[in-house]
Amino acid sequence: MLIIGERINSSRKRMAEAIRSRDAEFIRDEALNQIRAGSDYIDINAGSLEDEEDSVKWMVDTLQPVIEKPLCLDSADPKVIKAVLPLVEKTPMINSISLEAARLDSLIPLILERKAKVVALCQSEGELPSTSELKLELAGRLVIKVTDAGIALDDVYIDPLIFSVSTDGNAAIEGLDAIKEIMETFPGVHTVCGMTNISYGLPLRKLINRTFLAMAMLMGLDAAILDPTDIDQYSTLKAAKVLLGQDDFCLEFINDFREGRLKA
Amino acid sequence: MLIIGERINSSRKRMAEAIRSRDAEFIRDEALNQIRAGSDYIDINAGSLEDEEDSVKWMVDTLQPVIEKPLCLDSADPKVIKAVLPLVEKTPMINSISLEAARLDSLIPLILERKAKVVALCQSEGELPSTSELKLELAGRLVIKVTDAGIALDDVYIDPLIFSVSTDGNAAIEGLDAIKEIMETFPGVHTVCGMTNISYGLPLRKLINRTFLAMAMLMGLDAAILDPTDIDQYSTLKAAKVLLGQDDFCLEFINDFREGRLKA
Image 1 (spheres, helix red, strand yellow):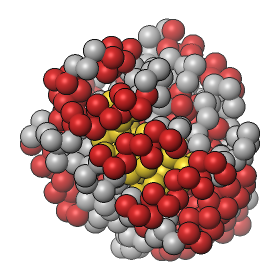
Image 2 (cartoon, each protein chain N blue to C red):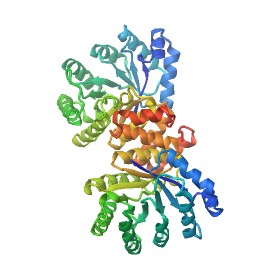
Image 3 (cartoon, rainbow over the protein chains, first blue to last red):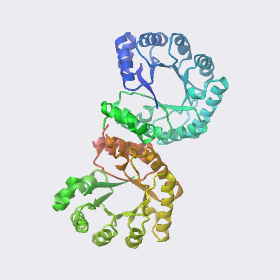
Image 4 (cartoon, rainbow over the protein chains, first blue to last red):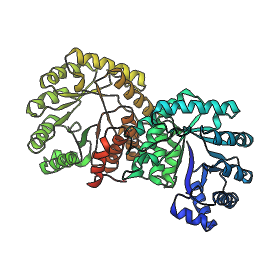
């Protein structure tokens, strides 16, 4: 299970302040805390700021000297990713491409050149897929695009796009079915989800999010964009690994327990 | 999701004392608390006591006048169930039959006569099924036995027998696969599990148990023997219902939240 730490995102008010004021200590602490908590990648996103490109460049320069894990460059704007990529040393993850031609065509050569990993959204021009059938169809078109371009399937993390159960009662079921079908239909590919959309508009969001995480892992989800410092969610993730036979002899679970990293 | 409250069981030390000393107030409180917490049935078990039959009779006489929910008569000894059944007023659940001939043949006429619901264990003489294939095969033999006898499938709750992941790393996966296959192969039948075996021998058992519950519900489990006063588990169950489209417009979840019955 690959964990992409989501906390360095300007959509969080406190984080936007820290990025605007170039508070290096704050974002370094956030990165280091997420790595201690189990992040494999550190996502960085300044999409809500006016000077997105400069902000992301500053984040890369600030974080890179102090963290041992790679970055996940998170922007809806391919120009930002293109401008920032030359500064990035460790092979990053690119978040994200979709079937939108502009985004796809400009990013694919960069992904190939850097052998980067990439998040591929089940999203086409203006098309938001609510059913598992449509998600699977878009996933299939993404798989063709990336493999035709020469990107290894093992570098591709398909995001089926999870919507809120408060607006669509079937949102979780359709997303879970899509994860299963994508993993079965395209052996070797990965799936990834954010864990927050599902509970939008409801109370006790973290409870719903971590319950969804356990279900998604059962369906085959092997990467997640989440806050690894949320100890309840982290505990659910580690319990799910035990249940799914992904933790030999429960050694990881028992070790995490002894180190006080899990909560009953 | 049918909830069978498990707390009135002599395997709990404090409960054994209460039953031995015929502490009516204690077991009534336990029953009423479990009903307030959402139990549809109140399981009663005195299997670890010398005078099991007298104890269960006392429990029935003590609880029946004060609870509005039916009982689940839980004994490995068909003679005890046979002796107690005439005292029971509301149509009970019988826990349990298996493919062991002695148990099956003596209980089936009683189940039919009372139109009782019944827990049917995937267990034959000396055979403990560790794989989903074997669980499904035993479930099939149970379905034939009970339907041949004239018991409605809707009254049958098949327990696939869940073992501990600490002794068999595949125990959860095999159990989850079995739930799915049983529900798909025998439309109309129910599945039921206890939620404690899975974590035997591990720390943070409640965390593992409730994570397993969410996964089992995704596979189609529609009844569980559990402690409904465990608020973390209850919260997971209610979040799972939201995610699985079993809670229209999330009304039950939001109502439980407002009444303080859920925990983040």
